[in-house]
Image 1 (tube, rainbow, N blue to C red):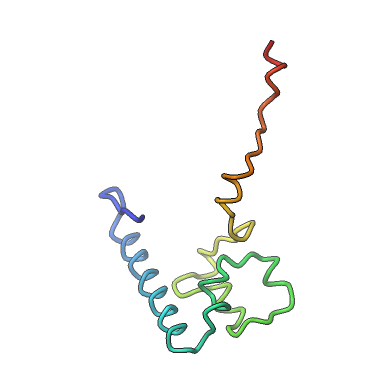
Image 2: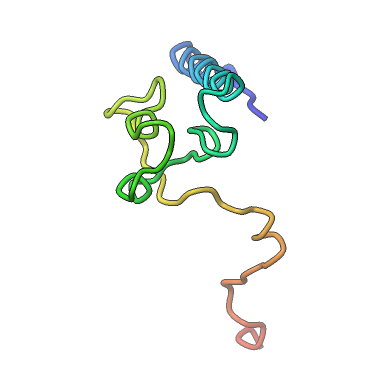
Length: 104
């Protein structure tokens, strides 16, 4: 859930609204059949540098993947990983703490 607060300035709120409008436009392109429902910029986001360097087989161009509407080279954040599977992580916990015997 998104909850902008009074601590956000007007420029940041405008940027957020522009991003939501751009996302809606991409949803409309999927709905109109311009992109398939299972292979589109929204479904494949985020795009890492590694995925962009691989063979490109998607129906949209790399430019849209690298710089979605509103993102410039100066503001680009390169995510280090694709999506994190939170449900898998919840079911398969990995403890990085020392074993209980070390505290004896």
